[in-house]
Length: 82
Image (cartoon, rainbow, N blue to C red; front, side):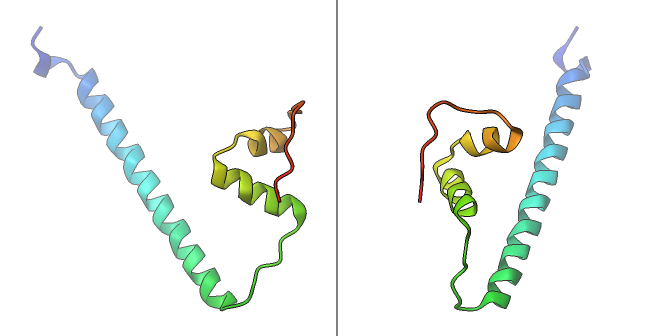
């Protein structure tokens, strides 16, 4: 059977395109939210709790420890990031 008669690659390409578009809209919305919050905040410093600071540091490092902690998983070697 020729390639152009197989529907699965077309369905997969359409699905990937839809997921990509959804992700791009979500990112644009979150960027708009951040811009509005920064505009409201002005030049003030954000006061974060220790847990929030750790979460922010872990997300910048690409660590999965934050997600494990939120999901209730315990790790034996937790790092303190301040």
